[in-house]
Amino acid sequence: METLGEKFQRETKYSRRERPPASRILSHPEDYKAYPETPRFPLPPPGEEPGPGVWQVMGARRSVRDFAPQAISVEDLSRLAWSVGGVRERRWGFLFRVVPSAGALYPVETYVMVNRVEGLKRGVYHLHVPTFSLELIREGDHSPSLTQAALGQDMVASCSVVFLWTAVIDRCRIKYGERAFRYIYLDAGHMGQNLYLTAAALGLGCCTIGAFFDDEVNQVLGVDGLEETILYLGVVGVPA
Ligand SMILES: Cc1cc2nc3c(=O)[nH]c(=O)nc-3n(C[C@H](O)[C@H](O)[C@H](O)COP(=O)(O)O)c2cc1C
Image (tube, rainbow, N blue to C red; front, side, top):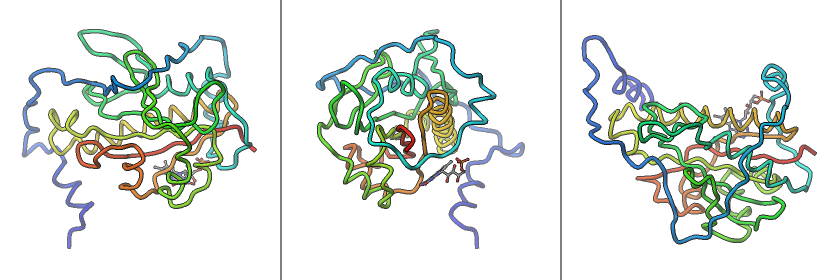
């Protein structure tokens, strides 16, 4: 019997016998989310000071799960955030980012749970892409509930920051139909790798997390799990 995963692969494949559906996209959808009522903290734009080369960084990257109880600087948080949600250029009404995205639709939203960052309150923030700022959506220590949601993986509480990536499904589905689900996960993978490489370049440790109770993470973020749902997490901190 065909499994759910096999059915998904079959039903979302393009084949020469069945032409891909013509794009139904008429106009460019809103390509970022905003919380206009919340306090916004602009992140310092990342500098261009020299760092290690790409080959060195790729060779150094590994998953780090043990962290020292140290804060990271807001400058380092800014570099990490830039690597997953920075706008590279504005052209034809699109905000092209440092990560690739199918159709430049950017269905993946970034949230940051701050455990220890110099000069920032603990809490859950959303990355507002066009202004490169953090919107404080839930103040306080939410690491116990997020750790529980991540199957008790305690790096969620011991790290300095947790990146959380959700998908706004229709932002991509409006163009690609159900095939959008493939692209959404691929987009998130690129963001995860950028986070890993940036952490390695800064001498920080990173581990991405795919094992979590979806509904519980959605609850921490206040998203409904249907229109917008959690995809992937990434923790970053000072290696122990
Ligand atoms: C999609 C994905 C999900 C992952 N989920 C977890 C996780 O839930 N917990 C964990 O400790 N590591 C997780 N990892 C990290 C992998 O275990 C790790 O990348 C792998 O063991 C290879 O080690 P390396 O990253 O040090 O090269 C995940 C990695 C990926 C790419």
